[in-house]
Image (cartoon, rainbow, N blue to C red; front, side, top):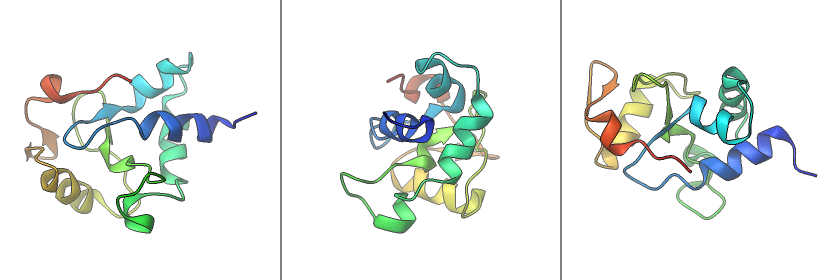
Length: 107
């Protein structure tokens, strides 16, 4: 049986390049309101971009943001999170994703 973290990482792997999802969306997909637990799972992600690069195993935790579209939480800092997202074509201003509703992904 998969752990909560493994289930969250599996969902997060589905977020395509150039799109984002939210902690809330991922939690609700698993039938819970444990949004902070999703953040904890992202923080404990052993297969993030910074650890393994773009691969099938990569869990793109940099693509998970707050429901408001603001950047929130990243083990390597928000500046790095913004850089990674911008490299994928996502526009950000004042730590908030521009046109957030148009690029949010719901697995």
